[in-house]
Length: 411
Image (cartoon, rainbow, N blue to C red; front, side, top):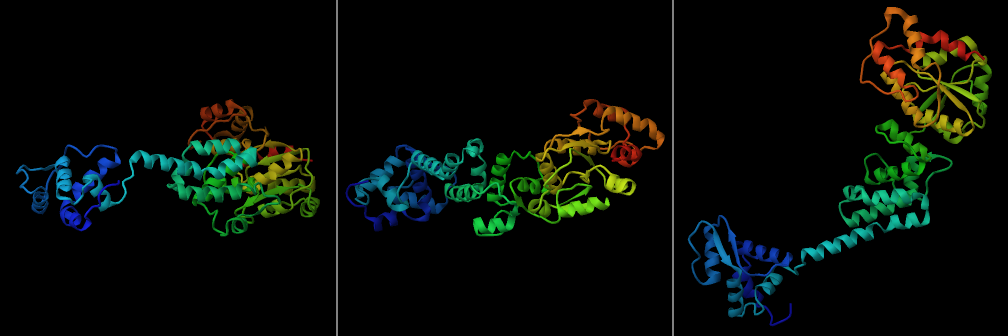
């Protein structure tokens, strides 16, 4: 604001003390809102010192009511008349508190900063159009703002995220921590819970089509779908009579179970696949098949509960090579959930895993079956199966139908 200079020393003595800070703050707030410095402002419970300061400012004792009320017009007049601030209260507030930026201007500036923060996403979509649907969604869903809070932090977060996404999927697969060190300069940059890991995993899932989920096993599988191995040796899958690598061929020749790690599957996946692969839930089935049929047993994979990242990687590889899958699991709610999860990754047909097969197993087992417990689940491949479980309310584990399964596994 131009005009005669403010006498800052006198201004600070008159209006710059702590006892009139409330008045200056109210005046500044009005300026930020674009409101005129006219009308009254009040302080609900003033101290004696605040009343005395107001009296010195106006040259008279303020009213004796409970609240302390001052008219901004009167304060402006005092400042102009005294020559302390010839341009009035607005100039005085600026000297005391700094340049006043109207809220509308602040809002426009902040929105512009957010638009600029998203620039790395626009470049990613332009260079790699396959990311466009994810870019559009992440711009609209507020995830970046929740993770970063400020435009400056968002810009850095998105630059790091885009740097990673440009490298995906990784082929051949690599350790997640080594990859993070190479791309982002820290082996822990993509650890669980970091904003960049959250955003990158969202983009990676969109790129690979990995299903939604939660939990450590799901995150491990989601990273693996993009070629990043968070833990490449502890995630395993149990197999029998698969071939396609020297190790698998050797084990199949003697008909012994083979444990494959995620690392092995990433670096040396099977080169061939049989036409049909059976899948079971429990290791007892695979062990019995090895004992009874040895090298003549049909190819079998055991997921051992919810499928691990290694199991999903193996199944995806065999599916790419043209294998068809036949699945059997425990007849209980957990078994149905495992089967449903699996169907989100590879197609399969039921292997004696239908309502009819369940009813036959219940009839054959007699009264010794354990009661069905837990939260009910669906069976999309055979809706009648879930209804049958609810009707009979007993669980049938794979071990109870082992003889029938072994008959199917005879080569």
